[in-house]
Image (tube, rainbow, N blue to C red; front, side, top):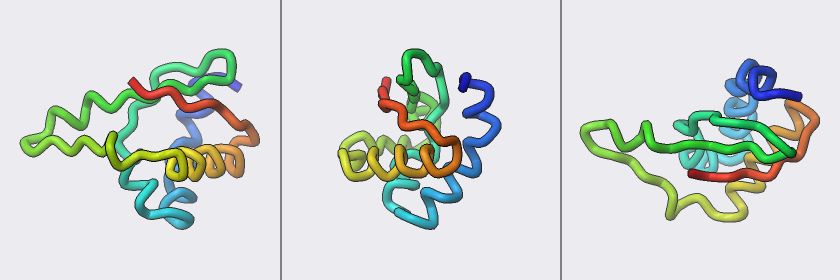
Length: 86
């Protein structure tokens, strides 16, 4: 699995996350996929700061939301990555 493969299925991951956990979807929908190395998927949220009213959901993202994202990734892609935020 490489980053391009994850990116090509990312909308499917987000759609499943929306069905399973709307709050987790809100927390992760604007993540930019940066890298996938050593089973670590790095997400960047700096684009969310560019809006007129920044929406930083970092405080909202908790271990349950992250686990929901990992579960969606596993269902769609068959991998269980560690999520790294920057």
